[in-house]
Length: 296
Image (cartoon, rainbow, N blue to C red; front, side, top):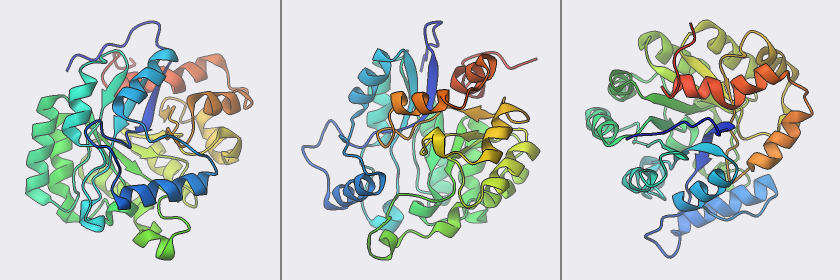
């Protein structure tokens, strides 16, 4: 897949959700309940975007966006809201805007590893995991064939970390267990797969210090800043983004839960230097995704 990073691109959003398929007229009951609960949790009404919707929004902003859905079928019994194949197919129409990621069932072992290789050959640039929604520990040896395949293909493993709005307020949290999303479990994966490119998604409340430690210690671990307005970022995250981890922080919104306009407006109030903003908005993601040369 020929993804084009052009000079006019001001930012790369590494965390956006395709929540609606172009092939379906209505969400399943499970997807509808999930989206309703998320809107209530974030206190914001939003449209469930298709890949076409995301492409239009981000093209108008002169931004690129990493787009994915999530395979949580092992826990919910429901298929992806949007298939990997649909995301990859539509992404070919927007090579200057959409960066396709895929999702595989972390419980699928060798079958999942073969799927990783197949999807990588089709052009996927990475794989999204949500340990809480998918009910697995990233250091579970049964998941390792999949992580090994991601390392072999040179694609990226993006792990949700910390608290989640998914299931919040539903009985029993919608069956979602927060314990799976402690970033220290990803630290084991970073040790056992030393060339695996990893993104820890979100400020990792209540394990922010753990996430910062893992990113400081493991050379291929990055942190995306999605899912929270920057005005709520903890001071230790802001300090590390300004200094020791300025080359490993990535712009992300969690769209449609946050818009890029809202995120950037609140981020501007933190008064980061322009050179660091360029790293966070664009350059760090470009290097990680192989869209720009590695820093010397």
